[in-house]
Image (cartoon, rainbow, N blue to C red; front, side, top):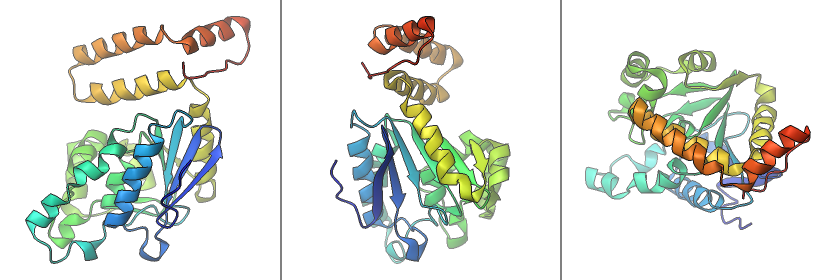
Length: 261
């Protein structure tokens, strides 16, 4: 697999079907420079369509996830400059990645880092993790989905509090509020994320992709529309070889072997 981004993004394959992307700007707490954002976009474009990849882990390592955008690249620029960066296009491959994505978050997930984590399907946070949208403190506001994804994850009251005060919340608060899927000890973060990624990678990939697609599409639809999407996606999976294999293996009391067909 090509690795055009070894400097800003460390890529490895720690298990069959699992790719791990690690932000690699430790000197600046993994601040999301324009170059790093472009490399993330390229990586998700590639691995999101790689048939050998069944789950993606996104992490900043064991010390920090990402401390936000690169302020030096924003100070002094005008609104047209910001608009023409079209960050929505850069982040689209992350947002629309068909593969399940697990964010393993330690330390700061501030600003753009919090927004990046919220692009994942599952967020596993270490006890040290802190989530924050501090943009108001420098005269701006979240611009990569923070106001929209926060309210969907935490509800209006907590999202408003985070965005209007710029105050961080702990991993435990994020878990209680529904932003985080699981909280683990600091030294168990990567192992926990990998364990879940391996579990997902062993599942039938067509079913995993359909589950992700229907859950995300249904969030912004009426209940009836969401249920209709669910019924049709479920029926579609009965055309797959993996459905036949899964049910036959269940009947025969053996481990299924899913091929993604």
